Image 1 (cartoon, one colour):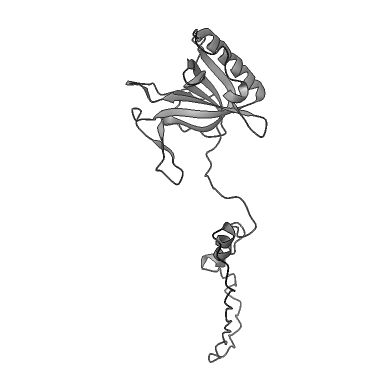
Image 2 (tube, helix red, strand yellow; image 1 turned 120 degrees about the vertical axis):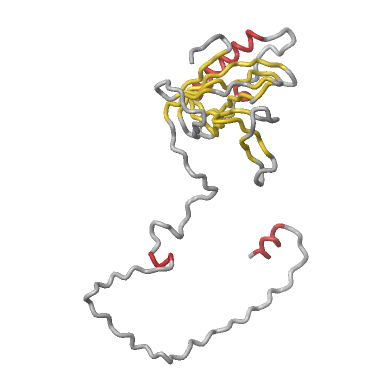
Length: 243
């Protein structure tokens, strides 16, 4: 994965975020409540390979410098003189890190692209269907593509990935931990059965309860009708009625 020219660059030691490299994906607005990326053919509209990446401030500075040099080299006469600021190019996170994104479309015009290659830390090529995971430490090879249209900048076109440290894939849960039921602490009886720990040679006391014991009297509590409410279409009434 050597750098071929001034437009090729390797971003080293960044953290992968939401990588989709094993095959092309496109965003489907009809999938789920908010839409999501779904597998597709390279020639489909919107098909692309991509990965976000998280980096330190120093890494972001080095990448921005390289992007600035590439823009200056390819800048045409009517293009803006400088790139947007680093704050506009990258997204700053609460922990002081920065995020960027490298993308390769499944096709440019009618020309299909070559799928980005993936390698392990020993530089051995990984299988075509290898699934890179969020949180993995990687090197990225990208091609700089300076442009000026409605806006201007430098795109990072994804070419190859080297996986330095693969993070195990985790099941996603939309919830957080709370006090309450725990599968690790639940007694066996919760699941509909109990384990009899009584030794076989120990006598069990007879059941002295009467078979004709009267059934317990059920106490009925009358519900008091709530006072009438004033007409209100606000959120407070909705939540009150829900409760």
